[in-house]
Structures are given as structure tokens and as C-alpha cells.
Length: 100
Image 1: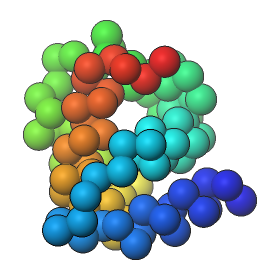
Image 2 (image 1 turned 135 degrees about the vertical axis):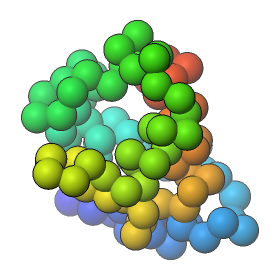
Image 3 (image 1 turned 60 degrees about the vertical axis):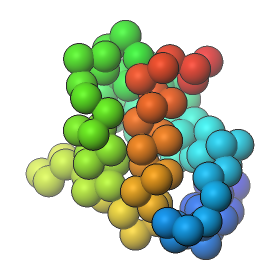
């Protein structure tokens, strides 16, 4: 239920002209992304997405994966709920390794 509330909050902020809410996006990463990638992001249904395992990816590539998903896999497109700026923030957050 809590994840649904985060999604609903994020859905209302998916406009490019609205400011980024880092706290909401951190919760999104750990609750919603964590539901597949593991609550510690070390992997589960989805792969490990900690900085040391994704450091070879460009932030733009990660942003595209976040927004458009990966066809043929369980990775959904988050574009309906996240703005490009929010997806860029998440990609940077994951690459910096500030997730613990």
C-alpha cells in the first residue's frame, strides 16, 4: 500500500517544470525498484543495481531504461509516472552509490 502512495505522489510530479523531490525518489528506488531489484538493490527478480555493478553504464542509458523499460523482461517503463528529470536523478543516484 505504501508503494502505491509513493507512485501516486510521483505521478503528480511527473511534469518537467516541477522540482525534484529527492526524498520521494529515494523512497521510490528502495520500495518500488527494490521490489524487483531487492530492498538492498543487490538483485532479486531484477539484477543488482548498486553502483559497483552498473558503473560501466552511462547515465543516459540508465535513464532510458528507467523511462522505457526493457522489452521482453520484467523491467517496466516508468515514463507514465516519472519525468525525464526524475529518471535522470535516479540514474545519478544509483551511479553515485548513495543508496545505502
